[in-house]
Length: 524
Image (cartoon, rainbow, N blue to C red; front, side):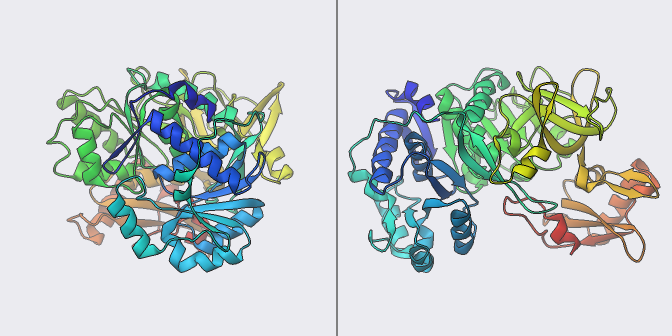
């Protein structure tokens, strides 16, 4: 991954945009090489595991590529994980170091010190301004380089280390954690080859290529799509990664209207917030070239309204739904400007194969629902220390490795993939298959009223369905009115077996470590 950046090392164009700071490729590589020296001085060696729990901040990018240059393996976890959870997963993966935000220093420094694992704190404002950096230290504390606690700012005093590991790029270099939406989460091993093979194809997804474009990186590195497409893809191609620790509508609008962001990556909620902001449609949208969406149910009305606005404003940009899983790094199918079909998640990327198979792994004809299988050179190496789970997930069929996605769907005659939901989330009512994702999509298509939906099956006192909804805070309708509209739409479009007996409104849904709905916790 580090070596893929070297072709840009003398460029003065912007590699990283963060807050009001722009960091050139030349400066980026200088900071990465100083960070290499810093971690080597701490004793990190080729093959060591380091746990990284950071949002999208420059120090996180320096650490990511510096540790990759050393040949270390990065165990990337959610930056909002509790301190004890970060320590637990660091010990589970036998990490020799932990890298976290300095906001944890004052309150949890003692816990990290007692863990016995060297911990490096990253000031998120270190590259913004001296004042902002100082204020952050005053509020959250600053490690003194004692008791195993260090400050990444120390890398600024280091000499650049231009050496890098020749470790086999086919070996695991990244650990990502699966969603665990219907059970225990797993640690997924990904190689540098898999990541580079994915981003090498990403240039074809944009109408005018990636080089020189600004890509909004609000999805964090612990998310495969955020790591692969928001961070590594733009830096691989010489574009700009516009980092954001959390989604800021006003800042995003400023970047879009000024032409500093040309490609948006996000979940449906991000786009709903953008579309609802009164200033979005008023500014210049001509710079938008693509808006990729995934990771959740995508209401067709959201795509239609976004694309209609882009066309009205004279922009070539379109919202394009895609599909991926961490076991294939991230995206493996996506709609493009040239190949788009509403309701689908697009065709397989070039060099990726997608098939649909039955329980005996036999190929199913177009239009027939079965499990989605993916093959190609972006597949995971396996699940960390779990040979049994790996053997169940990766099958050798006709001499080729195929990852079982656990998702149900079908391919049409032209190869567009249509999803039906998770295999573990297919309910049988009176012997009839009910796909929760279809019902949830109908509910969330009321974008002005329903923020999120989850259909759950309860077995007692008799098998019945309950639809949980989160009401949009800006909705002018009452819960009763929303319930009536949702039930009317479901009754009109679905069979009687799909109709929930109850509609229940909640303030929020329980979430997994990677931010997906935890259906097991929901049922409990």
